[in-house]
Image (tube, rainbow, N blue to C red; front, side, top):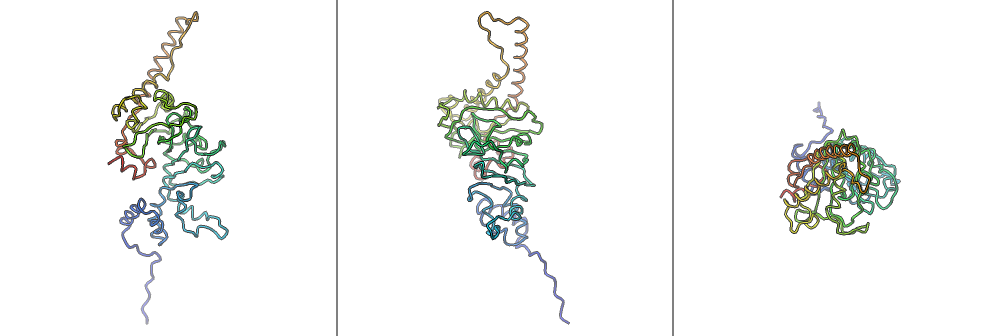
Length: 364
């Protein structure tokens, strides 16, 4: 009687333990993403380990070379050229924890809408034009981005924020993202365009919001942050005093939330009115100017000219209001925390705000 055949397992054995493969795939994620994508197609067992690593951060862009869907195999298309939804859902939606959406034309996103079950951080890469930072570039169509409006991230990161122009009124950016987020991070990068000033419009109900971060980001620590040089509103070489009035209004918009300002010491010394650069002195000058503007942004007693003098009761009421507002302003200022880039990276969660290569430069 012939011996019975041993039933082979339908799942092939992995060449290495899962822990080791996870470390290898994590290395490939930053050094050889295409090879990691090929590992997803070896077997179901390899896919179950590689896919969550490869697609934990998804890039959605109108540029094919940037879009994460370029990692998909060619068979994701049907015979008529239509993309298979099942493939997209399996690889993108299921594993994505961080989603980055590039600025695009308002018609490109159309009515597309995807939901990511594990989404934690949404990064919007904005474009700065004459209107300020916008998600829908190259047009002025008042339309919320359909790719973003159905999402509810815990952390909202706005890359390419503008120091003198920060508001919730950004073309394409859904207002509800500001209402639902627990953390909002503004990243002010180097730009050549200097739009007109504007601020405010953020939700009054900030019960869910726990933290606001503003980062002055440059390509490396040796480069100093400067505002744009092309003034679309006819003003060039503006000083920090003028722009700080707008920024102070932004800080006052988040009056009861910790507000972290990162790398203020990396601002160019000429912009803040100093003769030479020193990180500590630049940060102190920035902080003192901001504090002054926050206090001045509250209620101020009116000035009376000529015979229109206030009665004594009205004057006492104005003094009382001014003193109360100064107390509120000081409370807002106490929530402002000034940090160096290294302090922030070492003590805070910077997921979605920096690439690993960027963080290494600042931590070196």
